[in-house]
Length: 500
Image (cartoon, rainbow, N blue to C red; front, side, top):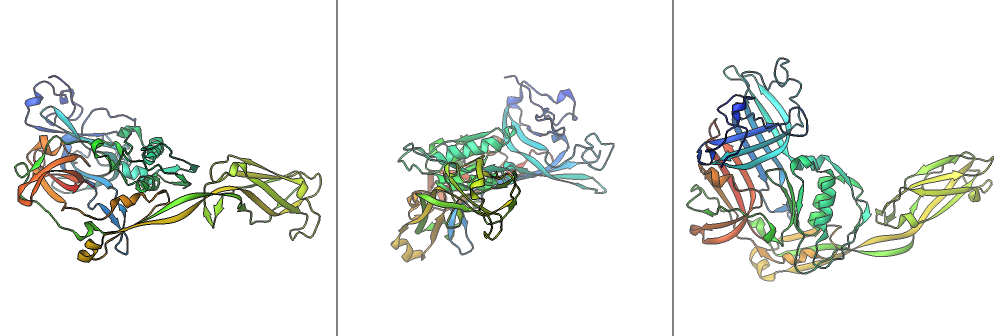
């Protein structure tokens, strides 16, 4: 087998001999590659900073399966935290000193630069982290100057990015969970292609076609993603290579599979097997929203009384409301009613017939409304203006299940789910549940196994001591930490969740 990979730590940065080739499939050395797009060119040059690296640690995923509200109730599945990694470089040459004008990277050591970390062992390259540098901190130690790069994965990008979901979206295909498709479409529009794009799979099985008549307006991408995914009991995460995955937890067959298994023979003898109270759910309250059509509704009323000169115009930016909440509407077909007068209190000459309105840039909840005074000589006040039409008004409903036997043992442990995009009480499928314990395992000195796992890989797990046999579990959290300065000894810690 012959191939070329940058990153052999035996050669200095920029040396063409950093390429290594045939024979590496039997090479026992663990080769780390740390690529940074210092030039912000949009691609990685292939050159690695791994020669200078003396410390590395990363952490990605979630530490618990459910989000818990301030009152102790479950409020939904928890999505992964921002993935992080911290890289420590030897800075004896001041290569990574952002304040050293003579440095090779001077002017390029900036937060926001894309960074990718991979490791190659016996000819196989594994992704470890892909994200952006969030902070660069030099430490002027007398014996050995260092610099620390703190990095975050694509979740931070989604938290900072914005998307607009104004629209009336309707899912009508039986057996197809279109929240995944909608989320895919919206996230693909803003998620950097540098990270490898978006992978999604719809739910299969019994149909729960949502209505998805909703509007959110312009919000952070992460808020939209959480709402869309949370409405249909789905899950999203960012893989080690940077790809955004959007999946449904009812379709585990499409989750990535890990070839290595977890057993007592390939892990350190330091299992952590907690039995947490917060994995018990026996009261399920699922609030969902059915959208009813309300015709002839005054969806917007102007509150100002502007003076408009003869031949001049004024502009409004109305949004449709129902019970003081912004709602989807047919605002593009709304009727405009304008009352105008030469006096602000309406006691002067009626100019209503001289005023006209034109809607433009209409979407599902709003539009731009331009009102013109067509009178040849008289200025007039707009004393009243309304838009009347059809709105889709959300009606809040409740689906509830209770497990009396479990309540008798544990007391009430409530799941209270309230998502405006949940249209059919879908969360009721959770029912009562008592998850088997989550397992925390550690792997060391097994590069071909510990680097083969990634977030939400399905892993066959057998731990005889705890009566766990061939149980498929998901990698809910994974971390890597160098135990020496060469990166040859790495500790990998994983939290394995029960599939449910």
